Length: 172
Image 1 (cartoon, rainbow, N blue to C red):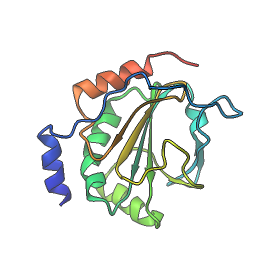
Image 2: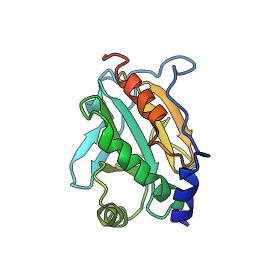
Image 3: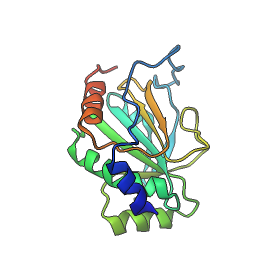
Image 4: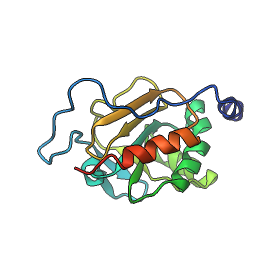
């Protein structure tokens, strides 16, 4: 099923929403000056808060190893990850697997090098979703620039250019 969905992605039918100026008022800032209080634990056991990524554009992807559309879009995410400037763009793949070992096995088996994390507390908005895969793009100030629910091909010149533009949109 995943291979079939990867083939469908290659047709160009599923394109992510490109980053644009967010609608409505900006999100309220946390005590640390960043709008999202989210703590994650990596495959290596270390913790990360989104606030640590302040100043970078952040691609947050919510996925699970048991989700065929999630698995189908991962090769494109990996190719995009390999091409971006890591000093300006951060990837945060949040596995929603109940058993972290399953996610870890998939990542190792496929040779993915993208950073994978697990939530240590309930996900705050805009990351709380009923649909996976879900991808949320944050600007360098932490404000939501775009959100896409469902699978998409992120490894396109247009998306890469939009992500680079978002990353260059200024530092807080």
